[in-house]
Image 1 (tube, rainbow, N blue to C red):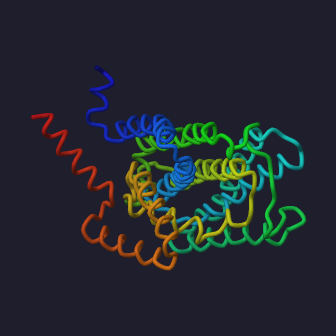
Image 2: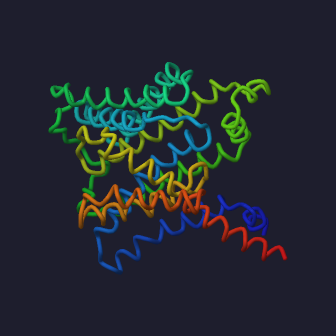
Image 3: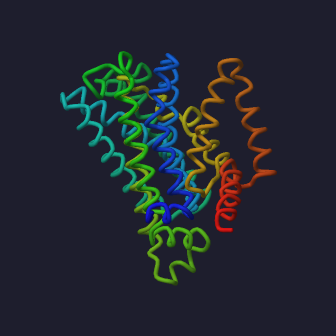
Length: 326
């Protein structure tokens, strides 16, 4: 009863609960349908959900326009792959260390760049991501260059034989990311974020250490981006410079976050769930139409639903709760 009362007026809490239930029962439906390719589509969607959640925390809440995600993905992915391949470490250890290395890279990058604002921060982080991709391409003796490199699968069993073990591990990673984002947004730091996003000078005058808060967010998001990258390479047993490609990765993250609802908790999740599968289907029938259709969707939503897809869901939820109160 206490839990229901607490959740009644907490849309984000309800969202995590319902989303978790759906994720855990989906494989059983897929087994009944005998469509194994769907589990792979969902796993790739979950990969982008982690990236969208972290990018939304930076831009949607903290107003930090960062394009460092692809560079941090590359760092987390290659660090884990190299540690496992060259030192015979268990992939799980490589996954954790790769994520920590990405977090440390985020700490260093944030300390250098976070005093920049707006377009200057965007350009600096974009340059960082480009430098990481250039490094993994040119240092072919270490990284394999454009050919990439093979590494171990995360588990003894191959995901191509049984992807369901990998699916549930990724579900746990996504839920961990969701809970951490929820805790940050719905804590005192969430209030600091809103204050900082509205007016940094006013927030500083009220005692908020703006730079330290930005750095904290940068490290947390970098860790989860590195975690996603490390899991990705041990899911496929292979890593290449495409993991750090801006147009392959970042455009999906940006479009999913904005179309879902920038600055909302559930928006990036809903946006990626809708955009990524549609994007793949359009690419299958005609890749030249992908950006055009995405642009049309973006224009329509920004014109009529500025809150994105989640704005529609929020309005339905408010109508339900108002009816319940009456």
